[in-house]
Length: 200
Length: 168
Image (cartoon, rainbow over all chains, first blue to last red; front, side, top):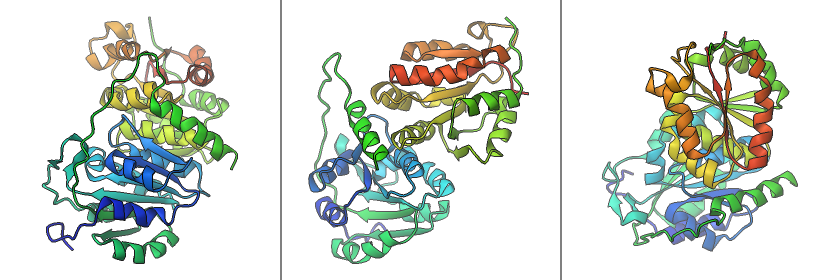
């Protein structure tokens, strides 16, 4: 399957497939997929990459290395991963067997108004991940096919990268002003997760 | 001011004494001898990153997972990773200790008077970002390694350790 003729599922359908397998994984989301994911799978172990562009995959890598007995998922975006593409090599080199790297490939920077990626959506993250040294990779443009294959992919040792072709949708994001003196969202989000992980 | 080279073994001992479990690094010529020791240390895991942006995020993830990382980079990498330092360090309030080599520094000069902008702008940038720093200009400054971790934890944010001369 090439990107040009890829079928594309809805982001909602893709996240529903994942959410059906949600247990006690730490899940790091970013950008538009993060909002949909949090609706489909509200959980105390949901973490978000907010305000450090492209950092979701390596934040998840750190958690995965620290917690080798716990599965860690990252729900990355194509534009986000393009900002830190070297993270593919970093993750492959660190080789955490408990890390699942989902890349939502819609070909656009959806949050800023759906401007196209520099590659005009031709970039193939599955091939890049293979080249970087991920032991297992896959791509899906159909939610039913993704659903049918996912259990086997989750059962295998990672790091695993799954590229999900999704349809661009209008999810333009406009940041609200932060009130002076308030605690930023990320600073509120991670300490309870750290406490939960410490308690096992 | 004359910066003295710190023997790599002494810096390594200070890192071990501070309870560091992981060193998250992008290679720094200035600290080459230290990196050799760290990479050969079976008790300390080294995580090799492609960029300093990544190193900050990996360090933050390790902290969430209950580990005690030290990030090790050079000054050019600090400049390259300012947004992640702001996002994770300032907004995220992650207590990341960052060891930064002042590659190319004239050891006779205060870093603020150095001819190289990479050396000269390091402390002012950290101050602009509100990141405390300590200059390791000789073995007598090694006490700062452990206190940097306490400081980072108590303030809820990053602290920088600036390695003034190449490790020997």
